[in-house]
Every structure is written in C-alpha cells, then in structure tokens.
Image (tube, rainbow, N blue to C red; front, side):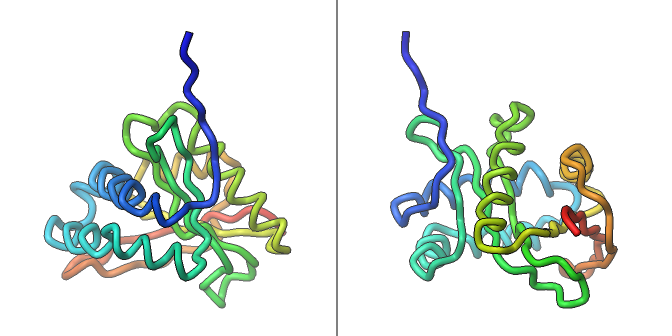
Length: 169
C-alpha cells in the first residue's frame, strides 16, 4: 500500500514554479467568464515563477498545501491592508488547483493560515472575494465568515463587485 504525504508548510523558493502553476490553473478556473479575458491573462502572466520566487525570498507569508511532491494549493497572508476595516490580519489569496477542490483541503489551508496569523498576534482576519465567484463566496460562508464590507475593483473597462468576509472581533 502506498501513502501520499499531505502537508501544509511555508513555501520555499524551490516551490516557486509549482505555486505559479497552481495560481495559473486556479485563477483560470475561478475567474474565466468573470474577469475579462485579456485582463485575466495579464493578471496570471504577472505572477510567474520569478514573481513567486521573489515574494518568497522577500519573506512574504506564503504557505503551500503539498500533495506528495506536488503543490495542490497555496495561501498568501499577512496584515490587513484595508485601513477602514478594523481587522488585524488578512488572507490575500487562498487557491487550490481545481482537481483538489471540494475535498477539505481549502478548509485545512485556511485553518493553517488563520493559526499562523493568530500566532503572530493577528487574531481577527478578513478575506475579499469577487461577488460573482459563487464558489469562493459559498466557501467563506461555510467557514463562518460574515460579510462586513462591499467594494468594487476595476478590471480593464469592467468594474466588479467584491465582498469582505471576516472572522474574529
């Protein structure tokens, strides 16, 4: 019987290519038909292996969920960037490759990022999701996130509504 190791750990520079590939696959699955095609391509192409290598080297908090020798997902997180929201931490991104979605891995990755933030004294947190991304909205609601703010983001000529989910005080 063979066993596949599943672990959540801090990203290493050697993970940069796998994280970039995960980002590419996850963003195409999540945003095709929501973010205009040319804008989506630009956003994906900006986050290639060199971008991730640099982010990891500079100390960005990136955790990966590895499934055997493959990166199945990642979370990028730190201090809350929205001054108007009174939450300490923020999960900037949490993505899984499509074939790993719906298996509980996203919940595990979210829990690990939340614990890491709490260990750093950031006990409350916020996550933004595009309102049209039903999968993300449903996922954050299932984790007990409460909607605390709405905004919009411009993607080329198209403005898209986004919502903030929060946990903690």
